Amino acid sequence: MCGITGYIGDNKKTTEILIDGLKRLEYRGYDSCGIAAVDAKSALYLKRASGRVDVLAKLVAEEPARGPQAGVGHTRWATHGAPSEDNAHPHTDCASQLVVVHNGIIENYLDLKEKLLAAGHKFKSETDTEVIAHVLEDKLKSLHVQEKAIRSDMLEPVFFEAFRRTLADLKGSFALSVIWAKCPSMVLGARLHSPLVVGLGKGENFIASDVSAFLKHTKRVIFMNDGEIAAVKKDSVDFYTFQGKKVAKESVTIQWDSTMAEKGGYKHFMLKEIHEQAEAVENTLRGRLLPMGGDILNAEMGLTAAAMKAFASVQFVACGTAYHACLVGRVLFENFGVHAGADVASEFTDRARLLDKHTLVVAISQSGETADTLFAVREARAAGAKVLSITNTVGSTLTRESDHVLYTHCGPEIGVASTKAFLGQLAAIYLLAGHFAAARGRMDAGDARKYAEDLLKIPRLIEETLEQEKEIARIAEGFAASEHFLFISRHVNYPIALEGALKIKEISYVHAEGYPAGEMKHGPIAIIYKGMPLLAVAPSGRALDLMAGNIEEAKARGADVVAIVDEASRKTVRASRYITLPKTSELLTPLLTVIPLQLFAYYVALAKKCDIDKPRNLAKSVTVR
Ligand code: M6R
Image (cartoon, rainbow, N blue to C red; front, side):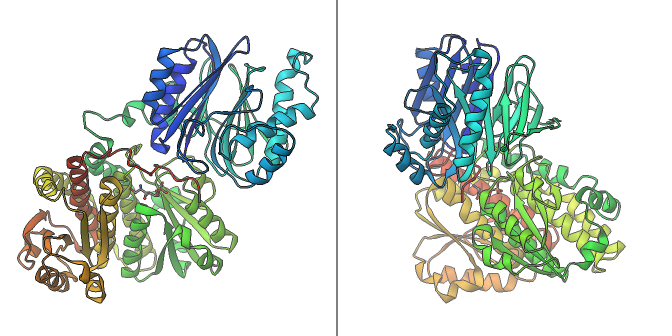
């Protein structure tokens, strides 16, 4: 939540680079934004705006900064204090010399604020962040900094030490980027439970919440760990612990291209990403399937077949769409004879405490930065469980806090509504389930070959499914005025009904429910009214006959049923409209059935003229609990 960016280097480009970085980070929050920059003569430039980065860009263009060399920027997703210009970051101290941008929550800010107010500090916002600037102001004073008297060669060490001491007073989670007008030669950053990454350029360096902010300028990056400070200067970057001890860190080269994160001719990132799903699945499966890719995947994850055999159970944990992937995982693992559970991360604490080394926790997260998922992982590891994370983000916090990692290879996902990342997560789960089944003797070489063959056909079948986009758009447009939607299914497709409902809620702001079809008659069927749209996911398989019955029950009460079927199941199901998918094996159907529901949600939102890539109240990466 919230995107932060910082830059130091060529004085002609600072504000331009900060604004461009913020545009790329806007998916993290977009209720307000701001930048601050300082020039070599210590003049501070500060601009903030309520609303989107475009508004800020206009303000900056109207009144450009004169020769700034270091700066920070922020795009906000409000936690403390309403979305407004006053609460927009950057925040400053009493003298407007110290400038702070922050992602996270300062849990003890009320305590700190009370003391600061008593000491005479004046606050300009309702945010938790502003206290940081004032604490820093006090720390500088306590180091006896007389603004005029301080020697220029002492500015950097004094600024660093005051910042380090400030961090010791903060409780909660934070990624921070800070500048001091008196010391334009250095941007400081620190991280604790919120992501922060440094980009290494030539004669310029960057710091940001994620690499997309500066990928256009450099692919050489250093991921910061919790408890680390970065001192970013024009020609060097040094890292320290919060105790002030220097840390040596390695850089890595990011493979993503910045154009990979752009829209490529589609109207929205979400639509582009829906169309990238065949590729996401193909890339995630490539070279890793049994029987040939078995050792490759085991080595990648650092998980042997013997270890897979030894676990008594597998426990999935995640949030939102990734949680729906977990539910598919649970069905698959149980189908292969492995005890499995799936929980939303924010409700996992008590269960986590009951775990031990016999359970493998599988944590799924596109970003690898979701706070609830990270806390669930920490609880599980503290209880003695091993953690395997499935994520799309190399170097994310989750990967560094897990015992084993299985990467999805989906490329950057920008749309707030997750689509291709979900397909990538499913592909990874199918890989993992196959490996577990083989390790535990539930799949022989012949079964493994068939399973691999079926999975390898999926990318082509996804493309075939996407060919129905126009028809799906037509059906969706017909329902654009509806205020309520129901999604039902059973067994391995029940999570897909949940995902269909989540997608339409997120981007169209309508009421939608996903239900296990068999549960409808225990209550929810009462809400059906004449003409209510009901999307029923009913491919061939063990659940089909019961599904057909549940659809009849809904129709009898007036539901207008759109059935997601294949050629064979279409003969069993009676609906007013059909979306017919290519045939695959029963367990793999979620990899196809979710696609029409994503497109359906997209086209309802488009007809309603909603802001599809930046839905209200949401952020791409939820780094607060
Ligand atoms: O980055 P993560 O996969 O951990 O994110 C989890 C959820 O916040 C995310 O899936 C969210 O539900 C999406 N907006 C769904 O489209």
